[in-house]
Length: 315
Image 1 (cartoon, rainbow, N blue to C red):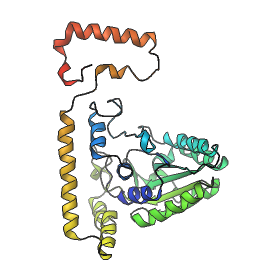
Image 2 (image 1 turned 180 degrees about the vertical axis):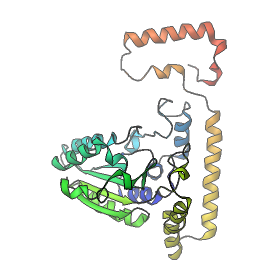
Image 3 (image 1 turned 135 degrees about the horizontal axis):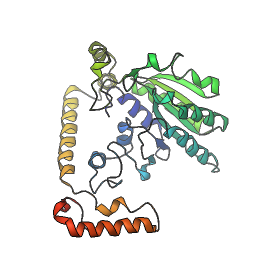
Image 4 (image 1 turned 90 degrees about the vertical axis):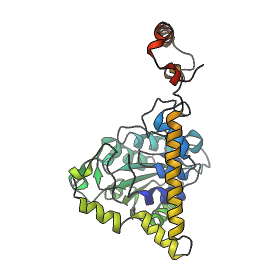
């Protein structure tokens, strides 16, 4: 799942949050996770599902989570995280003198789901400490926003439901930072906030998508060259004397080398032990799972030559 064009949203919002704030994300917020301290190694191990993946290979790729960093594990269905996030915020509200809020990221496509409307109303009526952050990137998979809704974007829904609302330039990391900083100050006072960050999904929906089938290439080039959030922040830093072209090239090379090297290493690591798919669900394993595990052990003992058991962790 690509993130080109949305980097300003990631960095700007993550910088304005506190580590104790809880994050409910979708699958495009990898920049938020990196800002929070997740390493490239952790992220790539999850994608490969090897034995160092905290999820032990049970989740789909790019479905990250980190309990110690207050990042709730991602799920595929659109908008399911939204009522969950509001529920978590309501739980925070019930703790006396609590100074934590929840941020929930979702796309313009997810905002068309029923869960989104329930979450908006839930947040407002129960006055939950939550920031509902919509990254309006122009497309829900292949459906443009012009076909998603007839109203004026997502922000227009906020005032009608009693949500403090702001629309911000999602390609401007500093503008996003200020918006989320103000939103957090309101949220911890149990005043829920809806933010609509206007951006553009420069990359394909996913690596299996060809976006040229539903949008002109000229449109992509315009946003790549004129409204590039990385370029905007880079020029700002260069103007302040904090960055330069040489530093940029060096950093880009180091980052690319790190990712490629980590991918090569992750691919060689063994997969989790096969028993992991049956463990860690119940504190005491129920009889039906015990039966399945025993049957699997007998099967592997009898037909082990037909399975690549050397690729899996041993007990």
